[in-house]
Length: 280
Image (cartoon, rainbow, N blue to C red; front, side, top):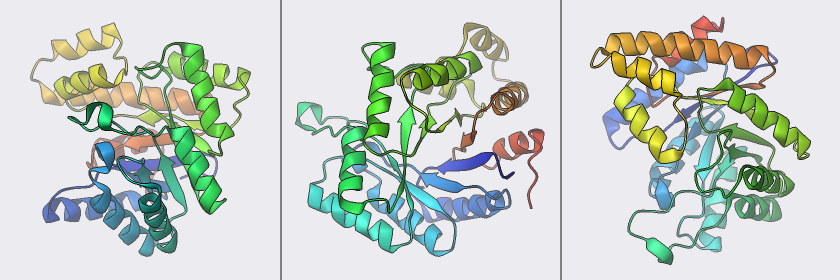
């Protein structure tokens, strides 16, 4: 990693020993790029809490700066305090603070705690012990009532004590640059790092994007649809498109890239190579 580009990688907690071994190998391969940190996701309602905690604590003890995703879920304040203390005692110095997703079947019984409240809670009890990341949505959160409201909600997270933000993935660079400009106009001057999702499977990407509000531009959908089941062509197209996107972002002032790896070395490694980032 160059001194002025922040590179980080996101993992999800595997459910099997084989998956854990594969993730360890991925971690070691990506460590050669000197990332600022890894992050490990947290299932809806904290459903992967133990797996997430195990990975994060183990990796930090081995000297890999690893941040847990964290949301209140259905936990009490005392349970959250205990968990965060465990992270602090395991040398964790960064947390990705999120509202989190409502678990299926919970309905109105689920106590939703918003990310700004979680940030304030951590700052109240742990001061500056952690660098706090939050989520940002260049194409606006699907539940937001308006563009300006979503900007103000992000500002609320920073006002509560967040240090930087990672965006939802996107494929339209103009959406990111306009979003950053609007954040600056609203008084947000903290880093907003673009999150990048490589393209390997169009059907999965389309389904996930439709659910989370990330836009796949129409021309891009049509191009991907035309490949049908030709996975090699989909991957080749995705590499070229996402490489160009990353290069444009970095050339125009983005502070770094956060890669959603999906626990796979490729195509992230090829993207890094195309950006001129070589392993040490």
